[in-house]
Length: 133
Image 1 (tube, rainbow, N blue to C red):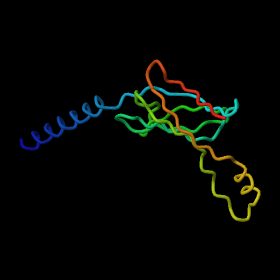
Image 2: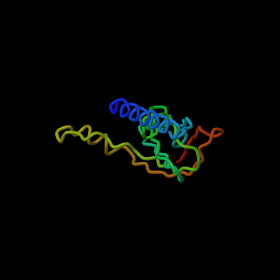
Image 3: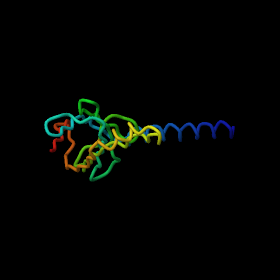
Image 4: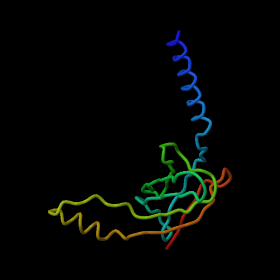
């Protein structure tokens, strides 16, 4: 009889935990956008949206057309709603081997980019274009 009671108790705890986890899952809003510099799209940039209130940051890397789609820290698409500080910077290039001087020259010609913006993510405003000279 004790084994049945323990199994039932364990089942109730597991079900409660599962329901609790689902109801407290952070609600996300899909966020997309683009980054332009001097009117041209910029690829291979890191984008990070840091919420000013609760929640974790969301991340993306721009594609060759400068477009991005945010991914929350748990792998789901989107960001929490509310005000965010947005940082945009160049991706770290792969470490070249010392004998490949062509790659080192190419990396040295990539301009460093580091910009910060303030935005508000909401269901009405969830696509952003960041532009700079």
